[in-house]
Length: 122
Image 1 (cartoon, rainbow, N blue to C red):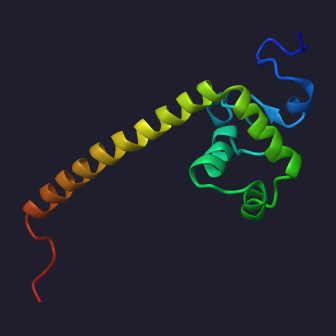
Image 2 (cartoon, one colour):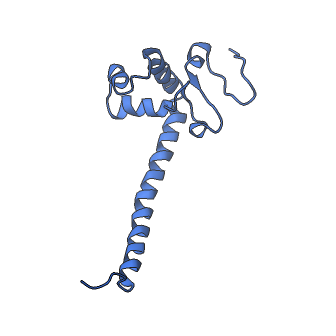
Image 3 (cartoon, rainbow, N blue to C red):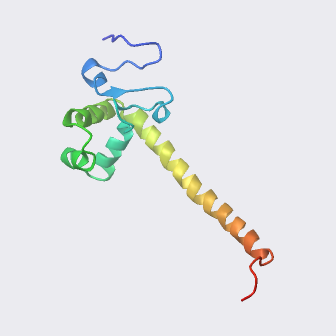
């Protein structure tokens, strides 16, 4: 089935497209809930990893509607491999930062502490 879109947008079925958008330059171009910066992958993580029910997601994010959360999950299930890949890439980036940033910070602190004491005695 063909759906009309602009050349910069991915084709999304009309009922889901009412709630889910892909905008280059917003949220890394990842699918998100229209009018929000909440990505489909965020909703998927809350639902699958954290075990939130749809009602709990709405309780935590009352700006979302029931239809928006259902649309996000429908989009997720239709594009599961792609979104799981996006989640895995984000997880890998976090792990890399955890490994690299603390060691760089520790080295800066070590260099600072090895220098002369700049505070007057007393």
